[in-house]
Length: 315
Image (tube, rainbow, N blue to C red; front, side, top):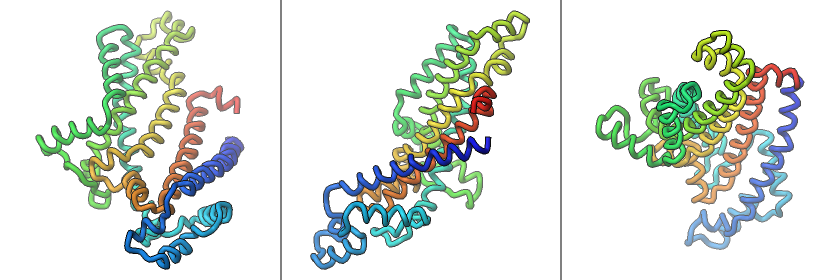
């Protein structure tokens, strides 16, 4: 297993290299002079030239890329030109709310999806199964910002159970922290619960149709134990894959929910940085998300081996 982990980590290096080249190329090819945009209309040509020199914009592509990637490999993402703050500090401040929101949304999605998906598989073709299918279709069709607005109107404005907007760090207290994240986590997690619900139902139905499950049923094992004990573990592999991909999606796609609920996360940082042409921040955030993507996929592969011994033996 240790060799497998090392092998997977080494295989991630060329992926990250290609991603870094693509990210840098996209930012490099964006039209317009970022120095002129940052300084505004009243900037003199001398001021623009000084800022271009400071940002390294006077250099060709390859030296600029090599200079940037060498500093990134040393943990130096540079300094935000727009705010004169180290990029690593800005990301650290914004990453905590986004990770908290993404984890909470996936916990909610899993709590909703697994029991309902198992119920749909166990009661295939009945009313509960139709309710599960309609719920999953609603989760996929309903935009997260629309669900977020509905949650704000009902639970924040009407009943005042949760704050309308804002983020309370965990240092303030666990209760306020959870209250500030509950509505955005539901808005973000409901769509992923629908995907997970469908995958759980489909994977369980396939497993329940296998020979060993029919044999267990012939021996008198109840439907409940067939689903929860015998079939669920073998159906876990595709479910784990969906959970991993959903977490990546929640992490990188929380921009709308963060903007709606006023959460100072990575999404709002990227949006503001694009408006300011703050290239250092944009490059660092996208590269960090790519790195997190690689790490989560590695974790998912390791969980495959735990869920299915055949995969572990094959590796």
